[in-house]
Length: 201
View 1: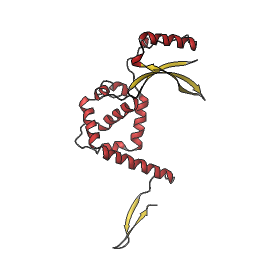
View 2: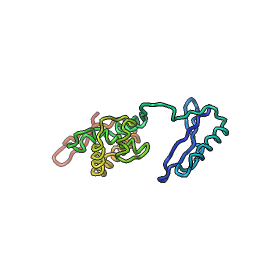
View 3: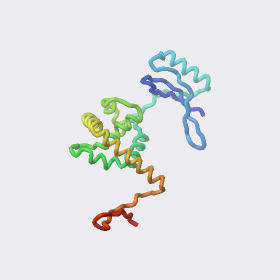
């Protein structure tokens, strides 16, 4: 069974339509890009219908699902949220963000996760994000919270980049030396002129 579908992608600020196929390999469902059908703004409705008919003929497709007849009350993207949650966990960003601005009275971490998900999937404006909160799996979010979070990111940009860089460097060093957990280090005084670092056993 061949499962074909169209995907709209943005390249260089222009939107294109691509033909994609689902296929199974080693028990796993994968996708492969078959062709670019053209730019969205340059394809008329009649041209689109002609493409569909040709594709049906070429691939001998009998069953076509009209997505306009498929009902869905809520569409959510759980995959992106899982990926972003994992990234924040690995870099301990939850703990870091809780200390970035003590004046914040809302969940800054969730706001930044929301914006990271937006950048990963399909970048939109602040209002665009706000209008699709259900899709990202968020509720009870105010537009001003998104705007305020962007201001904080802009103000703390270099500080956050430095923090993430150090965390990434630390992980690479631990992996290179085969260390799973960092050893605790304490300073013990030997005499008045020198000290030595000693690792806890």
